Length: 155
Ligand SMILES: CC(C)(COP(=O)(O)OP(=O)(O)OC[C@H]1O[C@@H](n2cnc3c(N)ncnc32)[C@H](O)[C@@H]1OP(=O)(O)O)[C@@H](O)C(=O)NCCC(=O)NCCS
Image (tube, rainbow, N blue to C red; front, top):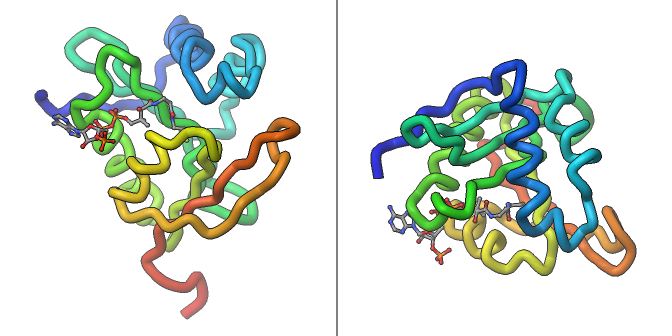
C-alpha cells in the first residue's frame, strides 16, 4: 500500500465522519461510548487531531493530547476497517511518535485490556505495558497504560 497522507483534521464534516468511524468500532462500542460523546471528543480543539487519507478515502484518525501530567498522550487511534492490516496503524503511530518526541521524551497511551489485537500491535511497535487501571473508563473493564520512552524528562 502507498504511504497514507496524514494531515490535520479539517473544520466541517470531517469530525462527524471520524466520530462515525469510532462509534462503529471497538473498543468504543464495547465501552458504550456513543457517537455524541465521541463527536465531542473529536471536536475538542485543545487536542491535535489528524486524519489519514488513502486516495480520497478517510482511512484513519489520530488524536494527541500534548498537555497535562503524562504528556505525550495518544488519546485515540483508529483505522477504518477496510484499511486495517496494511500498515496504516503503524504509519499513524510513527507519525504520532515523530510529533511527540520532537518536544517530549515519552509517548503514552491506554489500551483496553480486552483489546488483544491492539495490545499485540503496540508490543510489536516497542510499547511497554507499565500499569493496569482497573475500572477506569467503565466498571468491570481495565485500561492498560503503555509507554515508549527516549529517556528521563530532566537532564
Ligand atoms: C489497532 C489498529 C489501529 C491497528 O491498525 P492497522 O492499520 O490494522 O495496523 P497495521 O496494519 O500497522 O498492523 C496490524 C497487522 O497488520 C500486519 N501488517 C502491517 N503492515 C502490513 C502490510 N504492509 N501488509 C500486510 N500486513 C501488514 C501486521 O503484522 C499486523 O498483524 P498482527 O497484529 O495480526 O500481528 C486498528 O486495528 C484499529 O483501528 N482497531 C480498532 C480501534 C482500536 O482498537 N484502536 C486502538 C485503541 S487503543
